[in-house]
Amino acid sequence: MPETKLTEKQIYERIWRSIAERRLPPGTRLKEERLCEIFGASRPRIRRALDQLTHDGLVSHIPNRGAFVTTPSVDEARDVFFTRRVVERGVIDALKKHGAQDKLAALEAHIAEEREALAEGDTARIIRLSGAFHMLLAELAASPLLADILRDLVSKSTLVTAVFQPKCDTQCGPDEHAAIVAALAAGDFDTAKTAMDEHLQEAERTLKLEASSEGNILQDDVLGTALSEG
Image 1 (tube, rainbow, N blue to C red):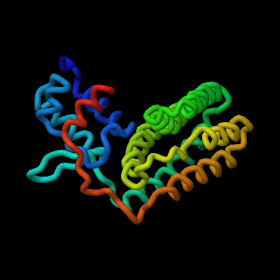
Image 2: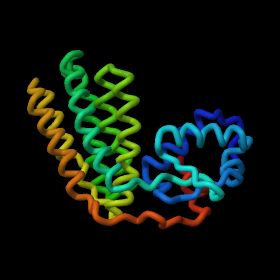
Image 3: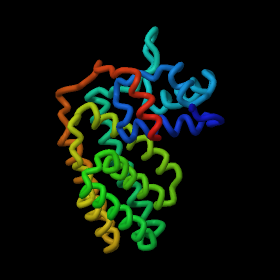
């Protein structure tokens, strides 16, 4: 049975999470009628959620065709990673300002979860936890604005990776995250920033930015499966 009484924000979050975890890949058509069925919501409510996702750059509206999960270009892919390097250095500066020592336990517990998912070969969980590590850093930095900006960038990075690294290499993994946390634990924030830069640069280097799967539109029935897992 379809879910009822979901708010516009909840619908937005469910679709956002499905995109961020790559259950709705770039090019997926987001048919309003199907979304109404899945969420048990009115068309105006669905449209408002899609409009917000469009504003965030995760959904594109194509005239006479409808809404689709955005397929980023090569230039957009490069810009996302450039911006992430700038923002995530700012996150580490904020951690330095507000203190990082009392945040280490949460970060180490998260990395332990990443290692467990990697050992189990749970690709969906690996993807979710990988992006969540970076968002956790921003949340612990006590800067809601930075956290919001990084949340948007992490979701856009997911789109980029899904297009330009379709085999889902898990290079954004626990060892590199652990190196960042180790530097924070030592109070060496410059090394933490260097480790973050190298981590993101390596993630960008693994992308095949000369190729794109743009135009590879998936079948509509992916929606029910992807969003039911949200």
